Length: 151
Ligand SMILES: C[S@@+](CC[C@H](N)C(=O)[O-])C[C@H]1O[C@@H](n2cnc3c(N)ncnc32)[C@H](O)[C@@H]1O
Image 1: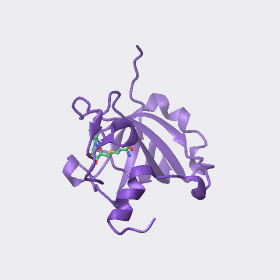
Image 2: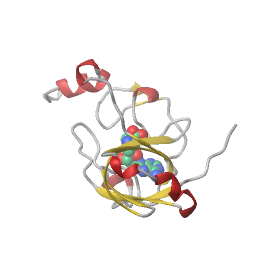
Image 3: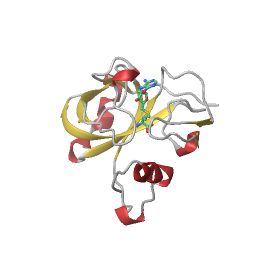
Image 4: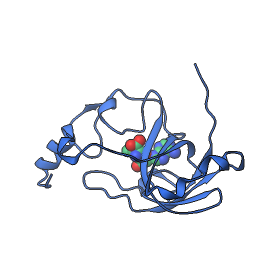
């Protein structure tokens, strides 16, 4: 076993889960902030040069887990590890956000899909080197096609 501590908390416009866009084609354009605790601020040194960040966080308000479930983006069940469900054995969330600016320990970002006050576990620069043509989107691509959405 191991334990973790938050390095900071999300400032989000969302107070409850119903406010967060869900389902096929949902866009995450909401702006918010990653408020890093003072003792971790030196860890932000040189972060300004990155356009996008991976935020790893805790689904602190999820209850239990469900190994197979039907996500809002489909009407068919899928395994939890083939989805981004909050109800997972280890309730860890991962969101790619656009870095808009930094004021000391506060990172202003676009693309939050977390609730206000969500604990942040880690931040890493986003450096994807997978060419788009090599990405496969699994059941999600099939659900999009069934709903007439273009790939
Ligand atoms: C589908 S999950 C995806 C989250 C992240 N992008 C990921 O892939 O891990 C996003 C949903 O998690 C829920 N959520 C957001 N913040 C949460 C929190 N702190 N605790 C529990 N559920 C949360 C909301 O219902 C939101 O719509």
